[in-house]
Length: 250
Ligand code: PGA
Image 1: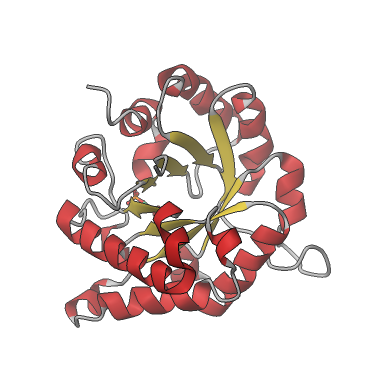
Image 2: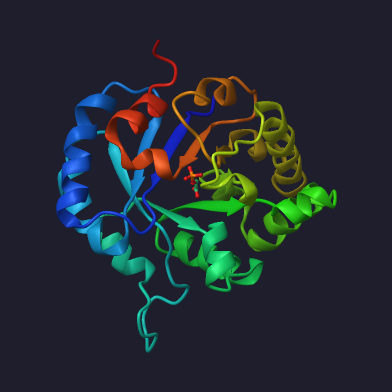
C-alpha cells in the first residue's frame, strides 16, 4: 500500500514569522491525518518552519537545491545545507524552475542525484504545457521528463521517490485536469516507471498538482494511481490545506 503524501509548495511566500504562524495553525488540524504531510517553505523560512513543526507529524521540504555540495556558486543552496536545517524532502524541477530559471531534464537529473547523495527525498515534477497538450504530445513529453530526469537512479533508490504530475496549464490557473485525465497520465507515468524499475514502480508515490482545492481533492484521490497532491495556492491557508490533507474525513 502506498501511503498518500500531500505537500504544500509555498513558493515565494511567507517570512519567518508568517511561516511559524501558519505551521502553528496547521499542527492541530492535521495531527491525525492518514496522509503524510509536508510543507515546503522558501529557503529563508526553512529553519523557522522546522522549529515550529518540531514534534508534529509535519515534515519540511525545500523547493530546490543545487547539484554540487559546496563551492563557488553564488546564491545557491546545497543538499548538505538543507539536511543541516532539518529538511526531509526537496522539490526538483518544478515547472516554474523550468520556465523562469532555465532548468532542463539534465539539471533535474543532476539535482536528483544530489538529493539522494544527501539523503533528501526528492519530489520530481513533470508535466506538459498547454501547447504540448493541444499538439497531442502529453505522454511523449512526460515520458521524456521521467526517463531523462531519473537517469542513473537505481531501483533500490526509486522506491523512495515521489513524482508530481503537474500539467503546467493547471498551475495557479484555477483549471484542474479532470480526475480522469490526471489518472490517465499518472497511470502512464507508473507504466514508464515499470519499464525502468520493474515491480518497484508499484511502490512509487505519484502526486497530482495544479489547482488542487478542498473541493476537488476527494475525486482526485479516488483514482487508483493518484497518491496525493502537490498544492500551491491552497497550501498558504491552514484551513484549506488541512481540508486537503484530511480529504478522507467527512
Ligand atoms: P497551484 O500550484 O496549486 O497554486 O496550482 C501547484 C504547484 O505549482 O505545485
